[in-house]
Length: 77
Image 1 (cartoon, one colour):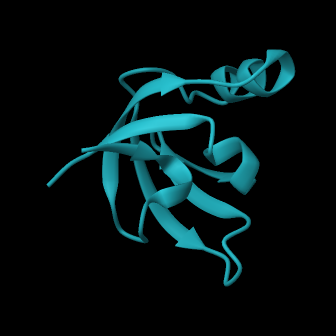
Image 2: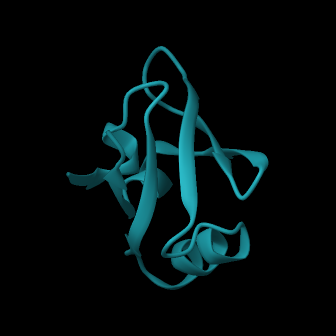
Image 3: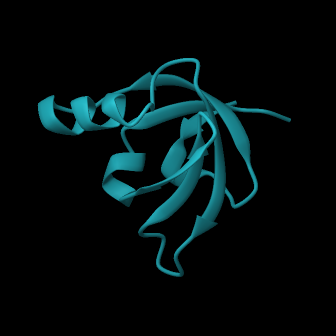
């Protein structure tokens, strides 16, 4: 099932399918290693849902909710 990274529950793992967004946001995500076929794991989520802490390519990364909404990923069962 494909859903936005911002919709993941803590502990869910998936594979990035696409990265949307305009210019700087998209470039920033690519520079941080959030690219198609990368494995992502949602480690923590702040009480109000912003920010999110994910593991990508073996390192921890903190994303704003608006950035996480640009990432579509397929959830692993």
